[in-house]
Length: 359
Image (cartoon, rainbow, N blue to C red):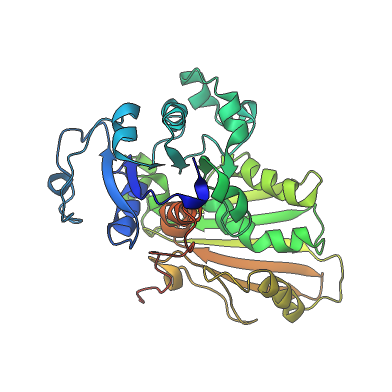
C-alpha cells in the first residue's frame, strides 16, 4: 500500500449505534473527503440506520450489517472500531490482513505489550483468548499532536482514552523539557455520564447520579497505567501518578486538574504558559488560555478542542494545570477522525468542529 498516494476514502464504522459510533457518523456525515460506506453492529443488524436513529438521518440510508471482515474489506478502506474493550481484538487482525487500515477507539491496542493489557483488563482477558502479540507491537498510540508521522504510516492506530487525552496533552510538554518533578504528580479528573457508554448501568441512572458527584476507581483505575506508559516514554524513566476520576451529573464534558512540583521555584505562571504555548503554537485543536482564566467544560462542548490553563502556587512551587475536553469528541470519536485525516495525508482538523455552540 502506497500511503502517500492513498486516495481511498471509504470508511466503515463498527459499533455505530454506541455513543462513540454516533459521534463518528455525525462528524463523517459532512466530511469533505471521507464517505461512510459500511455500518456494523450486532443488536441492530439488518435494520436501516434511519430507522434505528431518526435523530441522525443519512441521505443515503445504510442497512446495518454484522461486522464480518470480508464484507467490511469489500466496502471500506478504513475501519473505525467503536466497540467495548476486548471486542476489537477479535476483528482488527482479520481486517489488517485484508489491507483495511484500522482506527480503534477501545483500549485493546493502547499497550504494545499484550501482557500489560491482560494485567490491566483482567475481566476481559479471562473472557478472551487473545494471542495477537505481534499486532499489539505494531499498533501506534494515536495522540495526534505528538506522533503524527507514526500515525501517518500506521496500519493500526490505538486512540487514547478520554482521561489520558485530557491529562497527557497539558502535562507532556513539562515532562519532555524536564521542568517538573516526576514523582508526586496528582491528576484529579471529573467526567460526564456519557463516558460510561450507552448500555444501561445502575450507577448512571438519573436517580443515582443526579445532584451528586462521586469518585470511582480511586486506586488502580485502568487509565492510570495508560497515562504512566506515555509519560514514561517521553521522560525516559518510570513515572507513577496518582489518578482519581469523579462522575459529575452532566452528559458530556471532562475537567482535569493536574498538580506537580516545579524543579525551578522561580518559574512563574507566565513562564509556564510560554512553555506550553510554544509547544502547541501550530495546533488549532489546543488553546492555551491567559493566566488567571480557567476553563469550563461548556466552552468545548461539541468540539475537537482542548483548552488548557496553567497557574503556579509560589508558596510551594507547585504547578497547577487545568484542561477541558468534550469526552465524546476530542476524547473519543473526534480524535479518531483526527487520526484518520492524518493517515490519509490530509489536514488533521479537516471536517472537525473547533468552535463550541455556547451555551
